[in-house]
Amino acid sequence: MRVTVLDYGAGNVRSVVNSIKSLGHEVHFVQNPEDIINSEILVFPGVGAFGEMMNTLRERSFVDPLISYLKQNRPFLGICLGLQALFEESEEAPGIPGLGFFKGKVVRFPKSLPVPHIGWNGIKPKRESLIFHGLRGNEKLYFVHSYHVVPQDRSIILTTTDYGVEFVSSIQQGNIIATQFHPEKSGSAGLRILKNFLARSIQPSAPTMSPVQTRLARRIVACLDVRSDDTGRLVVTKGDQYDVRDRTSKAVRNLGDPVELARRYYDEGADEIVFLNITGFRNFPLKDMPMLEILKKTSENVFVPLTIGGGIRGYRDEKGRRYSALEVASEYFRSGADKVSIGSDAVHIVEECISKGSVDPDNAISAIARVYGCQAVVISIDPRRVYARSPEETKHNVIETELPGPQGERFCWYQCTVKGGREGRNVDAITLARVCEELGAGEILLNCIDRDGTNLGYDIELIRAVCDAVNIPVIASSGAGCADHFLEVFTKTRVEAALAAGIFHRREVRIPDLKNYLRRKGVEVNDY
Ligand code: 1PR
Image (cartoon, rainbow, N blue to C red):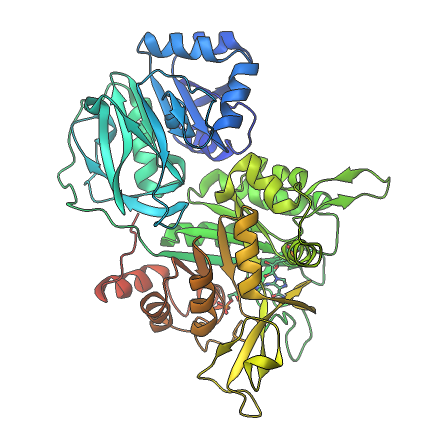
């Protein structure tokens, strides 16, 4: 089957294309309005922000052909913003009309809920559909959004999902199906949905189970720190408190091939995979073609969200040409990344914000969030504990610690660092997280240099303090040594995801065993 994909230019449709190709179909892109009219089957994966999407659809004269395609009830699959676009308007972009094919609007989740709603959540089927073929009904699918649709005609609702409120997670009217979740990022259940939609001849059915209430799963994230070894080959490495060289041989530790390891973690059930180009701060990243290649190859057969970090900032090349952080990030999105993570540059942006009281509106965080949505911008914080005898000793956000310092100090603050922990700066992790949230970041990846590679467990005090400071999801990182450490971080903090590296690379803990353990202990996790 020849599938037409509507890429209106915002960026990452690579995963959609890869998932369709992995199911044996051919992909053709919409280049001009006629391609919409002539398509046999149309997939519209919306990415970014509602207003920008609608403006681009209008500028490219795609609106009329889209509406006429929909009116003819021809096979259509909208994903995420591709669902929202079908409605009349969105609170995300007041005054900018949607396609208005369905009556109703798109509204933001209530302020009391952490947004974006990121992660794996269930669906409650309301009626039969071809897309349910082969599904049990209790599968979880990957969501990432801050707004949801409210159709006037309730008969089009196919599934709902609970996230503080019960919202519409997919709709169907005849051959027109649209989902708020991302089938292309939802592992085998998502691929099944896509396969069913593309097969066309399947009889509608209802899954055997339907959860009474769906629950967002806590995510297990596998992290691959990538850099060149001493022969120049990109390898997955792992540090002890950020030192990636073997104590005796002094060589860069090599824990495997990035593409192979990412595939292994996908097969084992990782909910997300993060690549950190840990020496990305040194070079011009767009010259770092091997890193882009790693991403392209991984996204061909890994259908869970991929984050890339390291070197996401503005550059000037040797000829004096300036590349903005947005351009750098765009290259990664085009290569298959779903999110980019910003480390050192976030610290510099926040420093500027604090010293001047304002910041360039085109700073990396805000600029990328504007185009790709805040969910695509992760802030990677690399903090280190600094002890204090009393809170008055420093102007930074201080916590009282149960782990006193070397001189018995009972207080500490968490100093942000740049360049992979090499340089401490005059900003604390709590301030950094707060300011980055205000600037548009959608998630915090919270490392801890003191714990990295130690297997001593996560720094619960740090994680609690940052979770309390922000409303966006936080990924706990650094120090996981056994399954109990995950249980501890999920039960003692509000963190939405926990990341580990060393124990997964060394096969000391297997992801399926970890998830079984957490499930037995009552933690909501995802099987796919
Ligand atoms: O500053 O925007 O160029 O981004 C650089 C990125 O590289 C940052 O996200 C920074 O965290 C990361 N990074 C830089 N140097 C290192 C290093 O290890 N020498 N790695 C590094 C950070 C921390 C985690 C690690 C967890 C879990 N590594 O990624 O995977 O601590 O480890 P564990 O489970 O084994 O304890 P920029």
